[in-house]
Image 1 (cartoon, rainbow, N blue to C red):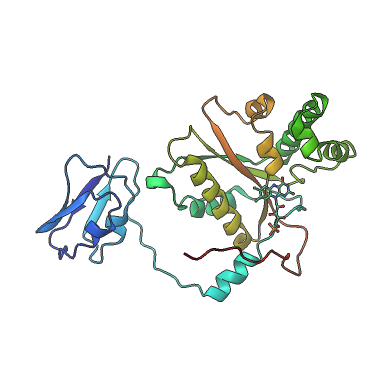
Image 2: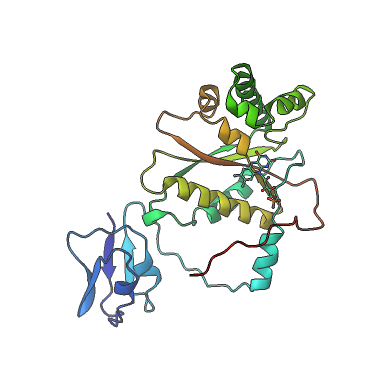
Length: 267
Ligand SMILES: Cc1cc2nc3c(=O)[nH]c(=O)nc-3n(C[C@H](O)[C@H](O)[C@H](O)COP(=O)(O)O)c2cc1C
């Protein structure tokens, strides 16, 4: 549980923290104060939204206050940055240095999560040999699906993927040097959504580092296969939410792939 510390000398009782609190946990009584017996989710909006800097939210899990000068990005720049993100299916052999991985992940950890629970844990494969072994296990899963006549094997091109693997290609994890997997302990509230959002933040942050990624959909499909779970060291209560292949892109793109027209209903 975090603690709401107020500097009464700086506070001008503007009430911003009261209106910013998503759980109605703060009331105004000359000065703002937490309502006893109500829940604080440690979302930090009382502190970060206080114009006077009068609030300090403290708790065992929370970091010291952070100052971030708000920077502006134009709609044109964000639009072109987001449109130019591509799924990368050909990677250079070189690994991403650990300090770069840490820098990216230090951005990704600020992704939103339901009631700021931050349930996402990461498994990051740093060794390309391990990535290759993981593809091998996904192929093994596909072979079992094909042998058992599973409907999934009929719905997906599993036999072609197995053939490509047998001629030395990696059709599952595309020879990426790294795999980033988002997991959560169980599914309290919005953990799956939180994991997908965190992966999307990662997907979007990577190109600014000269890196690229691709969602590892086939790995996700194989993620309940016991040998895959064992290989990744996942415990019974670990939920595999999703994964991205990550590395330095080998291929360049010159055009944005076409998309369908927007489907939207305004009410
Ligand atoms: C949930 C999800 C799973 C995906 N799985 C795979 C995959 O296993 N292998 C692959 O090559 N691409 C995969 N993709 C990439 C899509 O094919 C790609 O996003 C789509 O073709 C659009 O291309 P773009 O990302 O370059 O805009 C996946 C994408 C998503 C969103």
